[in-house]
Image (cartoon, rainbow, N blue to C red; front, side, top):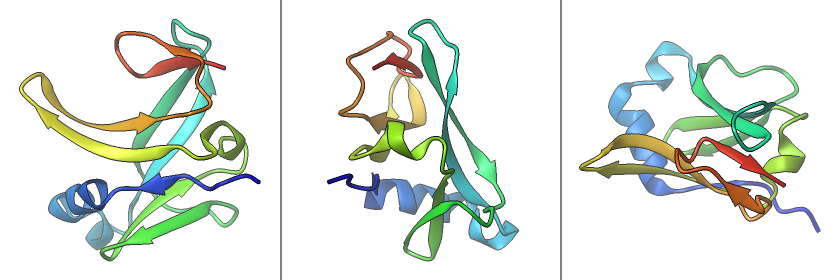
Length: 107
């Protein structure tokens, strides 16, 4: 059974803080080839597309395209605000390893 990605309240709250919905934008989480481990995340504000999986909470949207979805099965999309910086992070059970920067991984 393929579980869709989940989005934490913290991630939705951050999107609300930056006003993504007021700009007609959603947080797009995509997987692309590249990075130091084979795949890398592309996380950015973008307009939802017709074939996207749309995850909604707190009036905000996170979207994942059909090509990236298999790589994000069961993943958790969160927001981290630490001394080293604030960023959206992905806890991906499909990744067998990841690099130190946290933006690239291998399966």
